[in-house]
Length: 347
Ligand SMILES: NC(=O)c1ccc[n+]([C@@H]2O[C@H](COP(=O)([O-])OP(=O)(O)OC[C@H]3O[C@@H](n4cnc5c(N)ncnc54)[C@H](OP(=O)(O)O)[C@@H]3O)[C@@H](O)[C@H]2O)c1
Image (cartoon, rainbow, N blue to C red; front, side, top):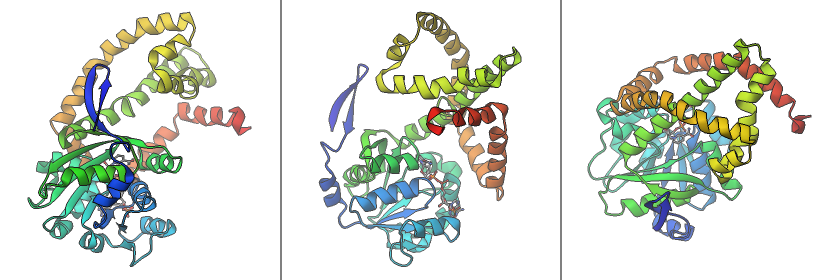
């Protein structure tokens, strides 16, 4: 572990320097890693582990996703199995089904969690809300988590580019006394950037807050509000979109991603800086009560229950697709397509 100072708060983190890949391979050399589910995280984690020399098999039900696994080089009967067969063969069972899928298959899978095996998650959801999900692991297995802080697609592409995606890790149950070293070895194996410690509870609540908040929900709400105000005052779609989204994603976000918000501000006009410094606290004051409301709704299980109920419906995929289509069809995101076409690199 390395001690790192995060804005005055010291945290223990793990990187490949303290925990090299060779050590991770040594710790997991006798394990069969069964990646259950080949959606978004499945291909990223299974692919990185395989390329890093770990013993990996995939468990996936028949259908389009199974065919994708075959296309990615997983061999039926050798490295690709049904969910139950993979769970039987695996010593580390990785629950990378959708959160609703994990609830649905749990009654079939739990019998394969025999003494000394490891149950692995990439989200605290199933365990943290176990009163709602019904996922209660047997006491003689290790239960661990490595949660990549980004899409499984990024985990894979960053790995192929020689970079790593930051991940949190947590131990829920240590039956063998080796849960932590196995968990960290797994994180190094999937190509984590740095690993920081959390609990299943903290990961689940921060993750649901983040995606409903600044990472996805709040940012779309902010964009829509500003775009609509500009349009209602006679600004063209091109102007409204550039001032709301394009300048942020193409010019400003890379600057603060690279060197911090003050540095981005310092590279804008004094007019922009003055106004942004004045308006940031007003937005914060308006938004903070909604953030508190959101956190409460996550913390008391409301958000988890909504997600379980909606995503367990037989037509959940069609319903989600219809909502995404409505977003796709909004003028703002249609304007976005034209703006993208007009980017110099696309001409
Ligand atoms: N998405 C991310 O990048 C991301 C990031 C960090 C953590 N996580 C966590 O990683 C885990 C996996 O997430 P994900 O986004 O990769 O999941 P996902 O893409 O939604 O998972 C889909 C997988 O679950 C299977 N599945 C769904 N319902 C099923 C059912 N009833 N029976 C059997 N299989 C079922 C799908 O099979 P079919 O295709 O056949 O339906 C597919 O293999 C979750 O705990 C998630 O919170 C995800």
